[in-house]
Image (cartoon, rainbow, N blue to C red):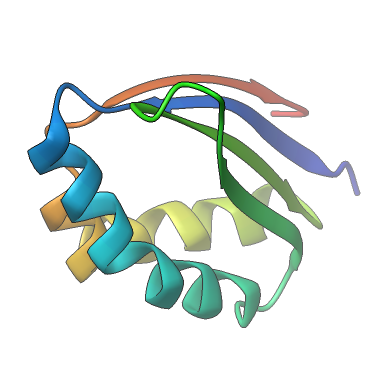
Length: 92
């Protein structure tokens, strides 16, 4: 099995986007870390208040796909759909 690593940036446009991230992030992190196959998951602010660093590691492609599917229909997914993501995925 090949681990899947996602890394990159979540880029907010303005204070409204920041508020959405702050309001939903804690639950999103907790739910993701509880997923079967999640090895690590971190979303941390950078020096730029509009930008968050995202680092994800999943056991395999199945676990990563299950995560993506869950997020697509989650409160986090709906609330942050308009926020830019600059991600690189390795291992797929």
